[in-house]
Amino acid sequence: MLGAIIGIINLILLIFSNEDNKERVKRIVQEMSYISELTLIGGLFMVSIGTYLGGVWANESWGRYWGWDAKETWALVTILVYAFILHMRLIPKLTGIYIYNVATIFGLATVIMTYYGVNYYLSGLHSYATGDPVPIPNWVYIVVVSLMIICLLAYWKKRKYQVIS
Image (cartoon, rainbow, N blue to C red; front, side):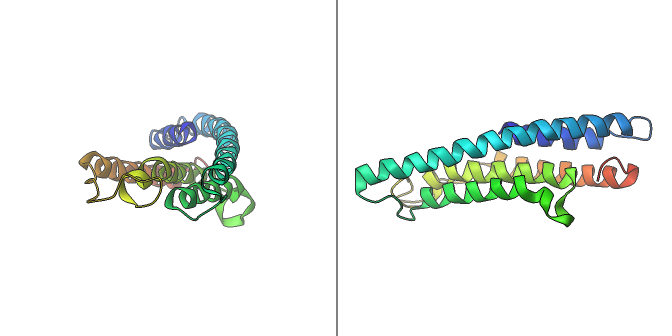
């Protein structure tokens, strides 16, 4: 979550960049992106350890390490998404700081799906969704649209002032 919050702050800083402060904004965004990367490395480590320990617990409880339950699968998806985000800098077209900060927001969406979405919207051992699913609150749509607007405005300012790559 901290990596996504830093990503949102970086995108908002890009929105407020102009010709006079673009060097300062560039420096701040780069430094905060390094901090975000460190938090994502720690988060990926913790999610991986938690998934491993969950498999050990599942073996003791149900006699199997992995059963492709919705919670187990989404935990794996979260690990793979964060591993991809941290390795994006090795792909030539995905090396920019803007793309990295947008990806951190997407990474948080996978964590939210793993810990909340699976429980209320998918069926399985870890689910409360036995009957009708809980309706999605209106604030979720507002947050998604707001984040999309922030990303688009930051992209426009980044291109206009050539703040970061």
